[in-house]
Image (cartoon, rainbow, N blue to C red; front, top):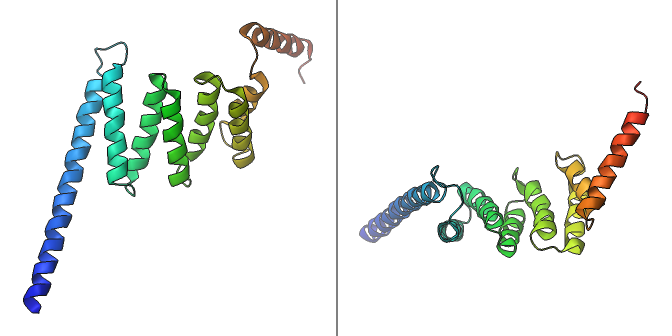
Length: 179
């Protein structure tokens, strides 16, 4: 009986060690992929490499869901997805991050970026408005609150309309005497 306990304990320890080694290998591989994808010599991001890196981030997050790096990799996957104009994928990563890690620092950013993706990548002003409004309800004092308010105000407006709004504001500020 004692021998059986030793065998089971040994198997557990070996499994734990091999999992930890695999995790370290995965992290090293991610670093290599990041270095290739974000090479200082390249001006534009390589879409094929970016998609491979996104897949590696996804796999890590799936294999190690409770690891703090998983949250970071989900956020990075969302950012990269935006940079290669894959709005649907970006939304998925930002939503997943926000749901799985609501207490972490970047959760508000993920909610704001969902509005941004709807607005700028998917041209869906209705959902963009909902996300920005939800952001303001949930994080009214966050550093991005003013940006969310401004985005709501300018949703659906043409470039010319936006320029006109800013010109009118500048006129009003110039006419308002300073105290």
